[in-house]
Length: 296
Figure 1 (cartoon, rainbow, N blue to C red):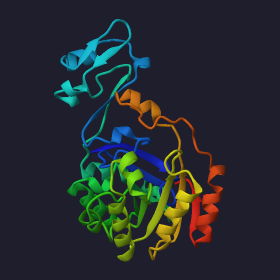
Figure 2 (figure 1 turned 180 degrees about the vertical axis):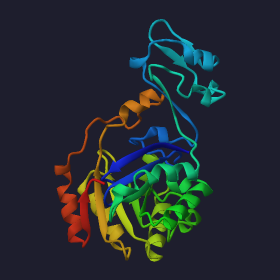
Figure 3 (figure 1 turned 30 degrees about the vertical axis):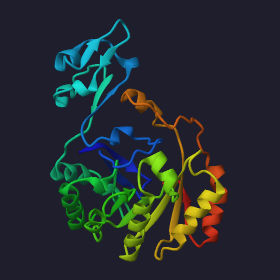
Figure 4 (figure 1 turned 90 degrees about the horizontal axis):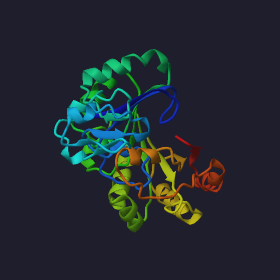
């Protein structure tokens, strides 16, 4: 299941790219800008400022929706029985069902629309969520893209079993690996994951000759300090075959989505990171022999 297809992107890989965002992720980064990607199923987004209280949602799922006293709609998401009943039900677009269960043929049809714009270096980037958490349809799509000679990149946390990664080697041109931290306690506390699993998979992926670009999201209060970034860069420098590190500055573009999903934004900071704050990190990575870039 996907939640977005973004066309004509110049980030997340070389050239002009089609970005396919999969739903479902094994991690819970507190600052995640795509909280609708957490669930592997449909998500309900509701913007009260757009609500006209027409009541169509209450007719589609009466157990889950109730008009309140002039402020919009009360939603009990766990009481939704048939989420597809809500697809396009809201005329004002205050209520949006996020998620499309597209087949591989459907995705290829969408991708083919963009092929004329790829030229020599563009292509498809699979993102999420976590693409590597997807089922066999992911492999079928990668095979189709390879047969079509369409360049494919994949944005991943590598927080999955090695078997899920290994099956993709040879079909993914570039793995864009988000390395969030190497400190095990911080990784567990802020992300609910295992930093050791990520590092082991990163080492294996490089060992088998895959092209890997490490991307470090710079997050205030989490890893935004020179000692921590140096530690991460030093860890990557011990892995043969990785030559490039990108630094991604934290932003708050996705904060409003949490409210629309009925979720709390646990990270709680609104201090965005500016590119100028990353210069020392860039300089250090370059001193360790890496090519660098700010942004995706």
